Figure 1 (cartoon, chains in turn brown, red):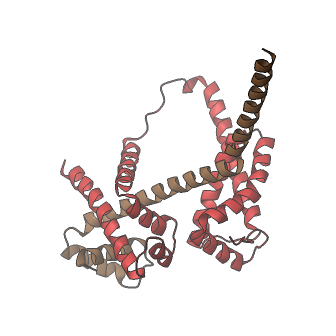
Figure 2 (tube, chains in turn yellow, orange; figure 1 turned 90 degrees about the vertical axis):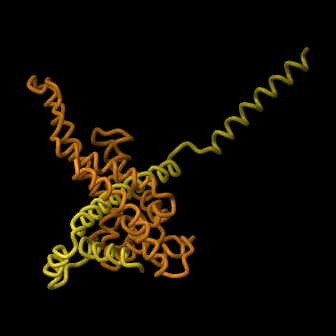
Figure 3 (cartoon, chains in turn blue, yellow; figure 1 turned 180 degrees about the vertical axis):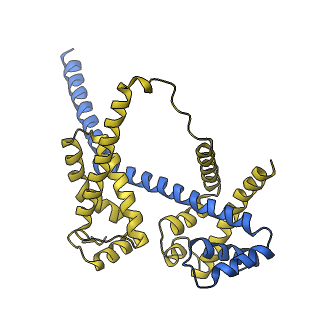
Length: 100
Length: 198
């Protein structure tokens, strides 16, 4: 991985990983040496928050789809009703045209 | 497809099995839970003053709580998954009924017939930030969005993400995941830098 991606991974470990002994001191030292670290860490923290919200929204859409699949109107049922109605109309029409 | 027998178990192994099933076969597992549990939740909500729409909303909220706990490994099943879900849904519905009753009381109180509170500026700012991050997630493109959500929210194993997106191995999928994360982070970082500079 290129260095920028490794840095991203390091920030991820700091934000999401299990804290290791001595990690806090090491992080404080890195912040002194790397002027952009604080802003990058804050941006990455917001990215994880945003991904959490986006994930929840997707899960909600998936649950909605499952609900529709299990309890929504079935397309087959509509087709059957439409075909039955058409049959009634056609039968009526043939009777009508046969009588005249 | 194999049918998962998740419902009668209540052991720690059942929680592990459930976690694995949700991570690797989300749609089928959620559909099974839905089929078994929703009728009970609907019955409860309808019996306690709610509508069919309320039942669906409550059940979706319960399933989200359940999913997040299960994949995080913090779900402790002392009963079947179905029983647990019904209990969560009942709690959510009870809170919702309380909230509605409080709202009705507030509506009757003349003091509350003033203009609604606009909320704290800090809260409005947080919501705006959330919206802008969501915008950037949507702009990522399907592949990056799918990889990031699969990993960070749905907690799918990287092996599965690699296989779904046809990467040769986990390492390639990991690199791609960080590239996607980098794009998103840089977009958010630009907004942050602009905000701080004004």
